Length: 541
Image (cartoon, rainbow, N blue to C red):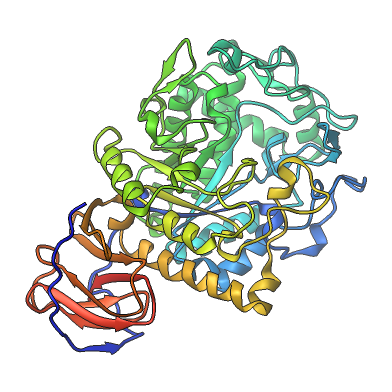
């Protein structure tokens, strides 16, 4: 690698915590900083809703409802927890009504605390909160420039239990189980035993399940729900097939509350045309919301969709290979896909990681993006499961090209190895709020995430820009996106730091290091200043 001669030209610097960027950069999904949380495990803001539907059976460790809810998320929005982290989008697990009973998947009795076992798409589960809570959450998030991404499950219902009947045969299949060795054996099947699979490939009309009819009548909302359904099918011309009912129900949260996007669950287990239509239905709902609520419109971005195509990685570019068929999900409704490569790629040196991602995102994936993550709710082999490389993990995640997905507790080294918890339950422990208050090491890590996260949020160039190395040792690089430019240094020696910024920042420009808060002026194409940190985040002020 080449090493550019750094010009050692002194410049005055001052500590300046109050410096503000001279121009606020517009938000772009390609550079978003997303916080992913399990609603039930993040914060309990209302203990009065902790038990509903007789869910009092003793579950296995971390497999029951723990009390987290929308009210808890609202409280953290009010406290600026997300703002201080530079988060500009919150993705939360599904909040629709879950099955009332528990089931054993071979890991002990489990309730639908995670939100992926739907009983009724049209209602919020009271364990998570009310529609008024969701409305308040979205409004307060939007007031702080934070978008809300809900989680969409169209592929399956919840398991069958003594309290939860199976949907009718016109809606679901209960066999065979997926074999995952071809397109059909991945799509026309159940993911696991006792997880009824929606017949999403079907366009055949199906009557509304009697269990929903009876439920809505008991709740006094049958007429309203049926009127809304009829309006939808008349307006769209869709047949009354199960997938279109569910699309409508999920789009209602867009039209009524103004949510900004959906993370879509189990994408590859459903024919790809479903997702193109789903994005279109949600976009129409988003447009209706914006028309009715012009004061609440954040920007002109389209409705955002990111897909979980399990096993997809950025190295596959735009095609996912089933073995007997390749599918381009980017051409079927998705702006972004979750990048399962990143946790492995994060073991590479900074420059190899950053430059390769920049090249792919600005070539084969231009106009699209990926969502990078290091830990998640269902990945049993995360990067740094024992939390021994926490600062490196945060640096690579938050400075890598693409969308960054911070999983709740990444920023606080939340324990991922809980004694007695089996399978993915160990990844879903309660947020470790007390560690922030009582452990200096946790507070230090949180500060690192906050500095990097706010810098990313302020500069779309970090995630969406073109990467260019300035020098190898010491390691400096630039990122540019439209009129946004930044220069970043990593693993630098403590003390004096010098970097050539010719062609990036003009002579006389005032720069701020967002990591230390110090300011410096460009002289003779370079800057020189001194900080105690090994990280430098330079922005123009």
